[in-house]
Image (cartoon, rainbow, N blue to C red; front, side, top):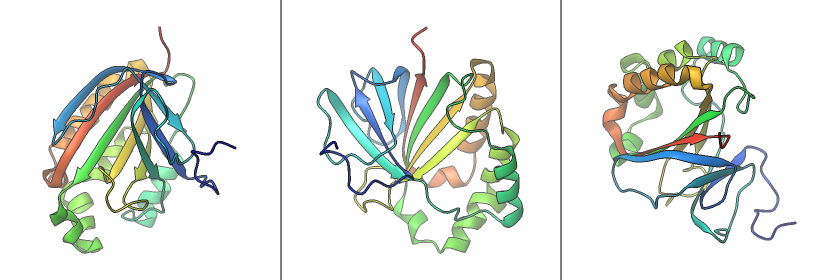
Length: 195
């Protein structure tokens, strides 16, 4: 067993490692807001929590898939029925979106955050419109460490033919009231093949 992997493993936990090695090649890395991170040429996505930065890596970021917090029963049913799995063979493009919200967001009660997220911003409804073309996995970092550099790691994959739809979805989300609470955002575009 690797000594740098948290024991016991959590099947809902993932670590992204950025550096010179990894299964995905970086196509672009853009800081949308806030502080940047070290530029890398490759990213690996590991289904485990690492405790030590691997050699040849510039950074590692961990998150965990948690229970749905803001969805209604109807929304959850629609998401579940339409969501495609991450890693489909045709989904050779991906985006790793690193997000941190301002403290004012976290000072709100959960029902207040839900109002901004869905009733005002329609975050869930926007995402549903792009299923199953854009598959997504949202990982929470705050559930692992209060001093994590990001609150969320969004990993989304799609076929090259669906890249325009993905861009359209991002434009809509970034124009919402919810996004006005964003303190830090980094957008890393990836390809899962070297062609």
